[in-house]
Length: 541
Ligand SMILES: NC(=O)C1=CN([C@@H]2O[C@H](COP(=O)(O)OP(=O)(O)OC[C@H]3O[C@@H](n4cnc5c(N)ncnc54)[C@H](OP(=O)(O)O)[C@@H]3O)[C@@H](O)[C@H]2O)C=CC1
Ligand SMILES: O=C(O)[C@H](O)COP(=O)(O)O
Image 1: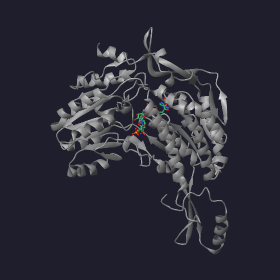
Image 2: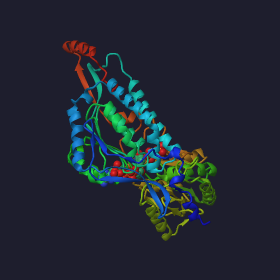
Image 3: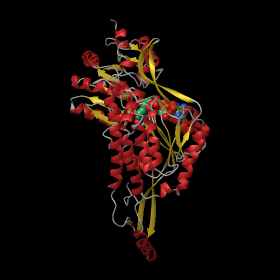
């Protein structure tokens, strides 16, 4: 059997899909949450096809799993107005509610979310083709992130008075909300990357307009009622439709105070520019990256292969933190390529519900065409696919391609391929790798593989000035989620992590009392009041 037929064979006939992994029914969603009510939608809908293909009489076809409303700018603006009204210039019920009460609402919401775990995990798997093990991880990590955010707020360092006195001035630091947050996430972590911004923004007293990504929309449907039931009217609004059709108008209205977008820098830049008062807009952005691995002549090659394999190919390379280019010292390149290609051949590929599977079908419909164009461009400029069967595809599945030797004439040298291609570049001098990172428009992370302490130390200083995390003898990754997560250059704006997100979605405001006799009286009276919304007395927070 040729390899292409073998690849087609990984897909099932519909009737053979194990029932424990099938959806209970097609998910035809016809409501969206706006201003505290589920509004019925009778307009056009978008049909959702899974990346999982099925064998049909017409050949391999993506399986239909449901549909959702394609709202227009009109509905989007109404929902934005609901968020604006709920915020009410900071005087609404939600922004003025004590922090403890807001935390209670989020805890109640999280409880309801946990009740929906089964269906949400299944929808992650069906909508974006993530393995069932990784879909479960995405869910659990999201819940852990929410609880860690709550814990970090509960454990804030406060003194009993809530005031810090410096040079005769008693000051109290409050973390105040910013207003209306437009929240958008990417398809690759459709639950997690949305909630790591949405929940901190919400808990800090902002109101939300949330648009789910086009792949990864249905999985948010089971949460709409929980949002409605746990938060005051208009505090969370969910709008469906295509980003390019409904979002620019929202930005142009000037009513958005914070744009939070985890996605591509191209979209983020366009949206920021379209805001009429961009100097008043806060942007919290997690964007594209071209993370490099540097495998030096002193590297432990088996460790480098193990880490770069999962670093570049887990979830088919569809992670912003994925290693998207691997630099290998010329003295080690043959060994690296042969070991890496062997390791690729051992990866299990198949349907997302299969045990131990790590390579699965790709959700983006035009992705395989794009990946092939990257390979053709590399071949035109002198590189080859060096692993057996690399770059072959069937239906929505693309078998990983290791491409060598990549150079600066090729797309794969610069572009974020966001898929299962591993470009390998040989180098003679470490300065070449440093120059690459200096010239790159991206600046998220880098991995260094070397057993030589002097060499590692000499690389850390120049690299830490180019990227926001340098990993030593390990792949790039976001976690643990308490670590600051950001990027330099075009890769991010603002920082996300449990504590940083709280800062990103609020602003410090001081209430300062000069310590004269009348103010001392006032402070005593004020301190008796409920101070639950006073977040910190520490100026540094
Ligand atoms: N740094 C980080 O933390 C992370 C960054 N990413 C990056 O995300 C990208 C992959 O995700 P992907 O979903 O393709 O990213 P996109 O930028 O295409 O989409 C992100 C969001 O923006 C919306 N959007 C897209 N185009 C427009 C437009 N013209 N106007 C308004 N809104 C728009 C999308 O809506 P719709 O889907 O309807 O088009 C989606 O909700 C990669 O570049 C990856 O590196 C991913 C994860 C983490
Ligand atoms: O969305 C992404 O790609 C993530 O930020 C990557 O997270 P991970 O490193 O934990 O997979």
